[in-house]
Image 1 (cartoon, rainbow, N blue to C red):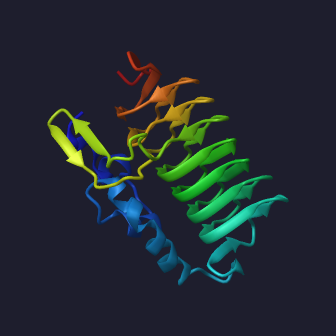
Image 2 (cartoon, one colour):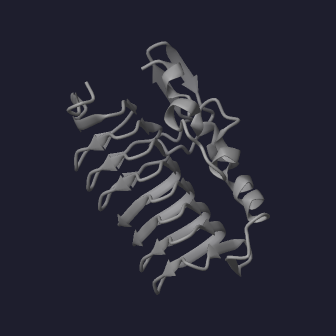
Image 3 (cartoon, one colour):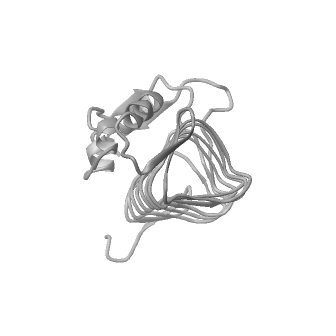
Length: 225
């Protein structure tokens, strides 16, 4: 895949508020990852009265469902009808879109969830952006740091892009399904309406409308050819 295919406009073609203020000025969506902290602080300034500041810098909509034993760290916004299940651990700089599920024993850090994202069971989401209606199966993880701790370099057909990022998890477009116990390696990008088989170790750029079975087997869904 070429560089021009992985622009913000290609991955998120119909940005709405408030996500547009984070992403619309980026050429590539991973450029927004270092800006998440400041962006959340800015969005907090204009939240309506339907939001409660439950502790300094943590705003939750009045319709949010909080189960017992949820941890809310710093600089967080939870939009309408979010559901936080027991053991959800929100460390810092987390924005969860309307109707999202942040589940049992899941951890979040420097992450943006678009509306209706499902992370229900034993997931880790760090330094990542998850598109609308994306879903992580039980135990699916976003790995956000390389084992050698070097900066992420993305490889394309027409060259490389040095991201300058040590911590970069994943970028998921809309309607991505990630199977149980899969690991999404640092810098993984998955386009819309793609399914990842359970127990997969995924890296690189996965095109839309596909079924990822393993690193050697990627097929187009019926009707997507």
